[in-house]
Image 1 (cartoon, protein in one colour):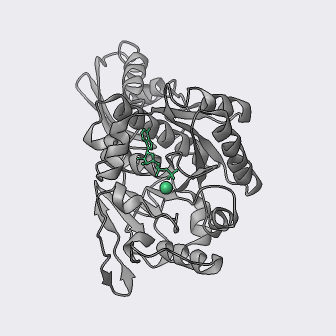
Image 2: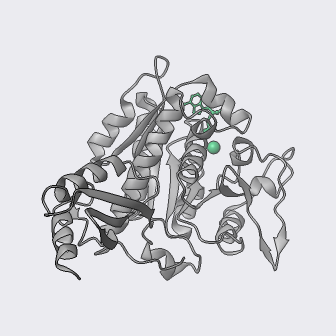
Length: 350
Ligand SMILES: Nc1ncnc2c1ncn2[C@@H]1O[C@H](COP(=O)(O)OP(=O)(O)O)[C@@H](O)[C@H]1O
Ligand SMILES: [Mg+2]
């Protein structure tokens, strides 16, 4: 490495990744540095394409290098992203998924599927490879919310192909059953149906697999949460007290299972249900607050008509709230995974 290159690297090593609290050089985020005239060019590999911190990195890298390293007056960053791989997934399942995130709630009707859907489409919109499993077998609402009501997965080489919408690959028992009949499945059947969604579906490489779990802390969510390796769980709650106390039980379930609670999303905030219950719960449990989504008829319509507001109306307050939540969630997933890894790993699974 030339002298100038090492001076630039040394300068960049003073830039701290604000969430991981380590410098960007030792985290292996800086790649392919070249000097052309008075410009230092390099690639900055973020831990998620949905990174909320690009502007922060740009200004801090500029501050660290320009005027500090003699002769360098500009920096030119090429952005790239590599979602870290959760190693425990590959110990248990032979699937090319970097992370598996459960969406959970203390009870039904709080907006768990709405949050799962909008999170998935927002991450895909940011450029991530995203899968969405509807594991709420008794109430498979994801197909409707994704505008895939009448989808039927094709089978190729003994594997089902997920159905894609808004850049997200979706699988749901809703695709496999007659929606006019009640779904009566017992524990073990439910278990194996969902397990097959991981193993017998041709997902391709995924950065994030989002799983919409059944609500509550009964047998179904409990056994599902144990039946595949979860990188973490997101708890969705409404703001009011009764919902918060249910959410608390949900968080306790994941603690018992040793699944990290990534944080809490407060949904349907506003005059009707109040505001602040989810944030208070996050504070009490000492887990991150991942965002507050307003109660807004457009969110409900988006669900009913398969047009998730995170992508069809990103400029509205609810759309923006989902977008910010997705960035916060993505950053939090990186933090949880990198707590056990030393550096941003090189691509393991493409
Ligand atoms: N922020 C919100 N504002 C308005 N309606 C919402 C909001 N979040 C969810 N809904 C609506 O509330 C109902 C329940 O949400 P859903 O996501 O199906 O809950 P769950 O999966 O927890 O049972 C749905 O009709 C949905 O469209
Ligand atoms: Mg649901």
